[in-house]
Amino acid sequence: MTTNGYRVQNPVDNAVLETFEQASDADIQNTLAAADTAWADWAAKPIEERAKIVTRVAELFEERKDELAAIAAQEMGKPIPEGIEEVEFSSVIIQYYADNGAKFIEEQEIPTDANGVAKLRRLPIGALLGIMPWNFPYYQVARFAGPNLMLGNTIVLKHAETCPKAALAIQKIMDDAGVPEGVYTNVFASHDQVADIIADPRIQGVSLTGSERAGSAVGELAGRHLKKAVLELGGSDPYIILDTDDVKEAAQTAWATRMYNTGQACNSNKRMIVMADIYDEFVAELVSLAEAMEPAAPQDAGGAKYSPLSSRGAAENLDRQVREAVNQGATLRAGGVLAAEGAYFSPAVLTDVKRGSSIYYEELFGPVAVVYKAESDEEALEIANDSRYGLGGAVFSRDEARAKKLAAFLQVGMSNVNTPAGEGAELPFGGVKRSGFGRELGPLGMDEFVNKQLYFVENQ
Image (cartoon, rainbow, N blue to C red; front, side):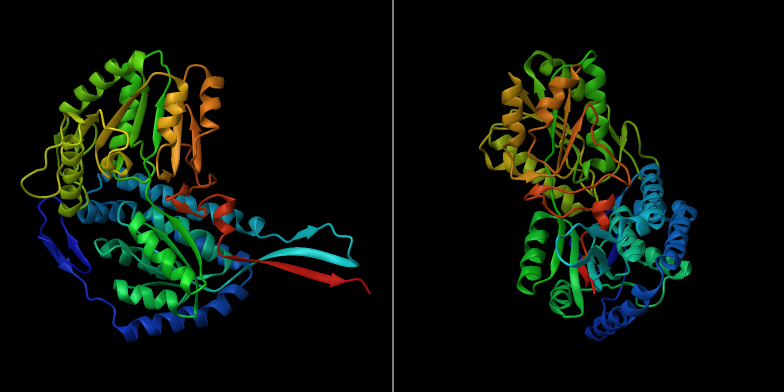
């Protein structure tokens, strides 16, 4: 069953528990007017005053983490401990910008031979549209809203249709923290209304985290209307294991990384590339781990118990991709069973995916470990870069210099050595190729929707 519109649809059994009314065109116009009007006052506030309000936003995320995690579990099946972890990280991100925002936008003097003083100023540009996904319903919003609220921009936020309660919970946090009316506004907009919002001259930019398809559509609209865009799209991250002292432990780390959020993370290790001499033992351990997995409700998930995917549609699409891979010559070593109801898909191990086949170039957004065998470092790098995506990647070796040599040539936005991913509020996140463009988090996250203004004063 497919249900359109904003709703709470339990992925455990596919039942629609609650529906929400879509915004009217008049609602959209009122929201845009409020965001445009609020911008002047918000941008004019001293950044220290904005920081106090943004700090309170961060505090409320932390205070309400149990409530927010329960909402995510109900709406998209996130295991409760992972939901709490996500909200805690969201709080850290928002606080990071409250603490560092003033430093990030300090004026910079530009050395010049001209007769005067030249400075670079970083100024807000106005109202922005954020289009956020369901897989990390709080973290994705935090990394967009945190820097832009500090900068002085205002935000219109369109969340995923399957996360209405999460969207409303974030709006309540903003309201309770004292964010002025119009500075942050959630809208339950349709796709057609989103197109109208992007076209509206009051909107100065758009940030989307989502699928490659959604990014193409939003990027086209933004370009047509000359709006700045940041797009964080799909990924099929390579995860290269050159050697290890403990193959089983390496496989266990790779498996735990792949299963996080039931495999529904943009920068998950979707392609494991393993050297031939340890390949068989590595795959065998993955198969053992997969076969031990059992389905559970989000409240009980963790370890060897897995949650449903976000929706029945997502599970059915993943099942189609796995069947297509097998039809094209891949070997399903374990798992890969779609439940009769709900969104459960048993964690799978897939090998022998043929390079050049259609499925080889697709993103598998769910609990499927795809493993490739490499005979040399050069072949491992070739497989890693043979992708239309370029979000993140990782290289592991006991010889750090060997791993660094390969990692330096990964065609990705985030390259890691001897860790699945470097993560922190201060570390920029984003990709290249069809994984999108622009950066979030770190100092770069506050340097996207900004007027980098030359301010020149001639000497008298």
